[in-house]
Image (tube, rainbow, N blue to C red):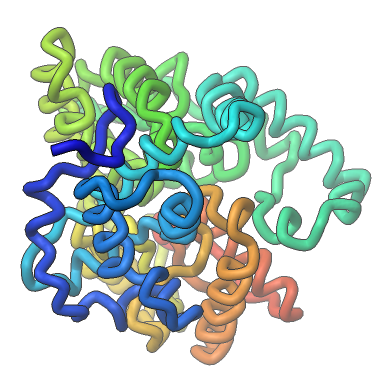
Length: 399
């Protein structure tokens, strides 16, 4: 039977699609459905659209592209689903199809940003330096509002913060330096290194470093994602433990085995690296300082839904004496979604404002956020509301 999928490219499989029984229990957990109220903005509706393409009743262009573009890939639906539908795998495969079907100029522009810049450490640092200078001169005020809300705060001093190549003694724990983390969140890296040393590891910062490929995979740029995965595997595979202080990156690296399953030269190495990945908050390190007071806790989607991490953040903070305060929004997505807040600004702004209000309502002076995209989105929305609540990685708070 012919399908509407573009031939020769990964696509959602019939077996994965058939795991969905269309019960609708995912709808209340879906942030885009809660904003729009539209069935096509829900996981059930998107899977129905994928089934229509699978049956040859629709193509991957037009409305189908819009349905997949609106998805945050937060995977909250997976946590709510009684049938264990692998929605994350479905939406990433669908996006490989929609990316290939875009008009060439649009496709090249998206690829230049995601693979051309984010995929190369030197380009990331060059872009970061340019952003730091622009922000120092306050030229960023000329950007459209949605871009200002999606832009990290970068300083040349922060980018130059030295990270020791090797610290401590014990089993080797290599740190993923990443892309955005490396230019805008180096203090988090330093706090992670300190935590590893306190936990009895030999912390190693690789010399090359670079993106894990998460942004490329989420955007359907599968070739770029695989190339970046191979680079990180070669860089990190000698470690006893691979430590990642970005929730989105740790979640993605744990899928390396699936990502490279069809590559005989890399499949076994990819599985071994995926098994060695630990999110930084999973490292059971004693706190570096006491914390007296209330700390609001934002659960990153790729912690809570993709990896089942939530208690670990609270354990880390409570060990230092902090009083953890949940936001009362059921772990709803903040709207960052990689570069979702750039590509889908209206929904992202609604979700960012809702998250900021939930944080302000706690009355806590600081909020723990363990993912860079979330931290950027939340910080900028808090500032837009006139709030000075501090946004910090959990390991920074206890360092």
